[in-house]
Structure formats: C-alpha cells, structure tokens
Image 1 (cartoon, rainbow, N blue to C red):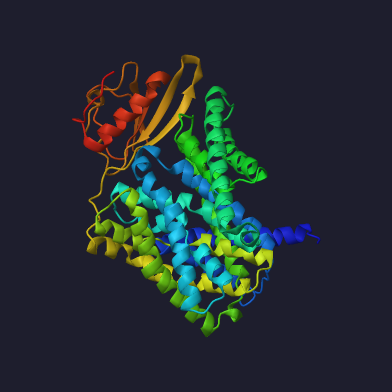
Image 2 (cartoon, rainbow, N blue to C red):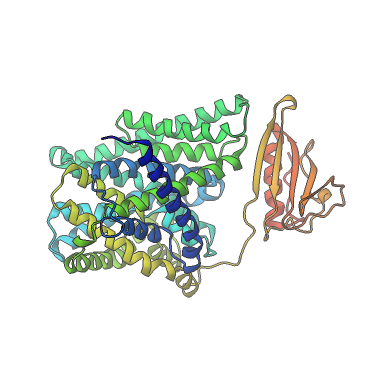
Length: 497
C-alpha cells in the first residue's frame, strides 16, 4: 500500500477540518446536555460510505486504534483523579467494576437468550460489551450536574476500573478460551491478569514518581511527556507479560497524578488535550466503521429491547448487589443506576469479536451501536432532572484549587501557582490570614493582567492568580492549608505539627 505526499496533504486537510469541527461541537453538545461522542459518531457516519464515501472496514485496525485511544483516555482519567477525594468511593467503584459487571453480564446474557432469541455466544458477548460505563460519556454530562462527591467518586472509579475486566472477558470469549479452560479457568485468568496489571501499575507508578522527583529536566514541556510515557510503559510491560494493560495504565496514572511531581497542572492539561484528541479520533473512526445499510428494523428492535433490559433491569440489579460493600440511600442508588452511561467502550469492545471473526460479529456491532446512540440520547439529557427529582443534587461547593508547581532545586523549594475559582472562599481573605506553614510565603499576586507584591493586608479576589514559595518539605501542608481556606474560608482550622 503506497501513501504519497499528496495523499498526506489531503489527509492533513480533512483531519484538521474534522478536528476543528469536533472541538466546536463540544460547546453545542454541552448546551444540549449530550456527550460529544454522539456528534463525533455521526460525523464518522457522515464521512463514511453512505456520506462522503470514505470506506473503512478493517476491524483489526479499528481494534488496535480503539485500544490505543482507550489507553490514552484511561491515562487522563487516572492523572486527573484526586485520590484524596476518590478514596472513600473507591470501594464501591471497585465493586461496580467487578461484581457489578459480572451481574450485568449474567442478566443481559440470560435475558437476550431467552427473551430476544439470541444464540448463547452472541448473548454473552452482548452482555459483556454493554456492561462497562464510559468515563468520557459520564463526565461530559456530570460536569454540569452538582452532585455529592461520593456519587461522583463512585461513577469516576467505576468508569476507570471496569474497562480492564470486560476487555479480558470479551477477549476470552471471542478467542474461544472459555471453551478451552472452562468457567473456573476463565475466572482464574481474569483474576491473574487484573492482579498482575494492578501490581505492575503500582510498581511503575511509584517507581516513576521516585525517579521524576530526582531528575530535573531542562524544560517544563518534558514533564508531561515523561509522565505519559511512564503510564504507557506500565501498559506495554503488562501486556507483554499477558496481564491487563488497562488496569496497569490506569493505576500507574492514578499514582503519578497524585504524587508530588513538578508541573502537575501542566501535565494534567496536556493529558486532557491528548485525551480529547483520542476521543475525537476514536468516535469518528467507529462511525466510519458502521454501514448504515445494515441497520434494519430487526437490528433496531433488538437494540431497543436489549437497551431496556440493560437500563431497567441489569444496571439497577448490578448497582444494588455492588452496594453491599458501601450501603447508600435508595435515592443515590437510583441515580447511580440511571447514570451508567455507555459510550465508546462498548462499541470498541465489539471490534474484538469482529477482528477474531466470530459469527454474527457484525450484527453485534450494529446492535451495540444503536443501543449506545439511542440510550445516550434518552439518558444523558435527563440526568439533571433525575438528580433534582431524586434530590441528590447539592449546592455549588468550592472546587479544588487549580494549583501548579515548579521546582526551585537550588534552594530545595517549590513555586506554587494558585488560581482562585469563582466559588472559592479564598475570595476576601487577607494574605496574612492564610497562616501558611513556616518558610512559605505569598510572593506575587496577578490580578486583571497586572502584578502586585502583596502585603499581609492584601485581600485576595476571585480570578486572582498568586504565587507561593514553599520549602519542599512543607509543600504538602501548604497545599492542604490552601485547600482548607478555599473550602471553608479564613476560619478554617489550621493543623499544627
């Protein structure tokens, strides 16, 4: 296959135009309360064989590119997850990602076989690919719904953790390993791959953080590249040893994102940018893979019934069973059931049986595509209303600080850059009232594009950026103090040594 410079020019032209259109579509989708994935999928369909005429039918390439994009998205999810906030919800999130997935697969498989008449292999695959929630779909909608941290943390942990077991399960079914090893053997393989993935993710995460803290790189732009490379090192090492690469990359990114590293905010911003690019490319590619001519009334009817089974039976039952590890009020459990949005992950998972040549794999792809589109359109815009009806919303609370750190190696100190959000209670606090740890001080305030050297009586305002120099050994306490004041105001309790 040849690829000359003229074809490259055309590819760059089309690619840049599609990317810009996709970026602009984010604002449209957020106003409508819909995940942007729907627009990206439809863009792919419009560019495909029934629209512009671009033909793309290579399931193996789609499988490889889809997994690469999911790895990038999981990396961004791990890097931007605050362990301090998610820790209390991790137990329920892990239960939803394991026990909940198993329950959902069983319910959908049994229902699809006996109610919809699907063969057992196709029914189990349908249950497996539809069980995981999608982080990109969930949080593009939940950003506009004020929820308690325990709900947000549970959904975030579930969407970050449930990809790994379902990928292993779908792969084992598609390759015939279940028939060769039996159910118990399959469970053993899944547990082994997940444990190996978590262990190597922790090893690379903590080891990489230890190295990054001791190597002063010559450019701040190298730190995001190094962190992303470490996460993918965990993925590559684990897959080479036949473990779960998705578990490894998420855990490694979670450790790195919560470690005391230089330029953390820059790294997170960089990861968010490439994750958006991965999402755009992934959804457009999946849209290209669809052949609209195959979407018959039979496919639509099966997809709608399967979606009803998934949404109103499998999801609530899986949430109820998973909540045994962390009981919640019925209102919150009901919202968790309704907020289990599916996105790119189920469609990407269908590329596994497609690439393995499983019978009826094309039918499975078409059913899952319709399920994702139809039920995302129904579920996503209704989440704010459902949250209000169930009374699980909360008033706007101060968001965590936008805090950036740069190393000052010659004096063993760090320079923190803090942005005061519109709802932060740092507004109105005098610099002297911050009561920072010994050795830490506010060195500069940036307001309306102007800089000023603060005094003790200088009052901080919404929209201000200010710089804090802190000894490295006191950095954690300095950050904690700033977060306390941001959340509770000048009277926040100060924890002494």
